[in-house]
Length: 456
Image (cartoon, rainbow, N blue to C red):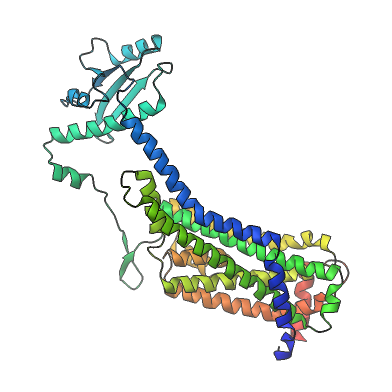
């Protein structure tokens, strides 16, 4: 392989790149991704604000439609339900605690008189499960679901405050008791040091990694499909014979791959820019609005994604993604070159499809395992370092901090070397198959031809 082997690379690259970005499919694809990145979180926040405003208006409505509440409190605590009537909303609701009938009889009576807007509440205390409150209402009572949900939330707050009041808990102590408890597990490494246990992942990390896995799979599958289809089309239309008069086969392969890589970089930068603008828009949407928990919660989840991301991680993840794209693109180019007719491409795609799906599902299994029970460090490192599986998941593992910078760098070096070796080996077989016209070559035929070319 020398400099003359790349004769015509510039022409092929420019032609593939300009023709690729002018395609309607590419424009629609990048427009869809940018729209999703720009509008998804703002729309969620706006919907959350609307829902929060509706909930707030319902909570502040004048009167509750509930008429009577029959209370069966078996906790032994002296709960003063008159405090619940102090609010205007529930001032007309009657709390009946001295019931002559049993809880079962009251439920049966409610079944027979299902048109009454009454509730039955039973409170119990279990040493293992804590306080258990059951609310019973008739289906035909006419009580709206929203009213029942508001009552449930208000009653939970009231009951907690009553319990804390009985226990003589001050406002300061109550505030401390209601704060979230963050737990960090430190695991001893092989060198004896202790570090955070990253085998298990949170739900937010799970969705980030799963989304990243699907997005990378989509990019790779689209890019490889374009390369394979382009080569197969040129062979079937005999255009490749004209191209070879002034262009070396290796320039065709490398020019197509680099063009796809540049398209991917442009798409990624456009989507990231839209997502960055989306974050700024989210900040303005929730600025000064502390009452809408659903809206602010969306922003917290969005911001937490970037807590572990640094410039070095982004650079390594991007380079690894491009190397993985190039690796699979070579396989796609070989699939396209192994056929003489365009209608044979689907059969040639079987091996590639099996390879990419096997690697994809292996990564998905790892992500699910990390969420549920925690994956072993050896299995996670294998999926990150092995090039075929790492091409899909390693960028997300690096960005979320599930693997160290050192492991990510080692994985990057390995996949770059693997892609370079496969490119050198495939260049020989690619050149031999470009002018091949006949029955589609099987995988074993391609391997045999590759060995022959390499030895020669």
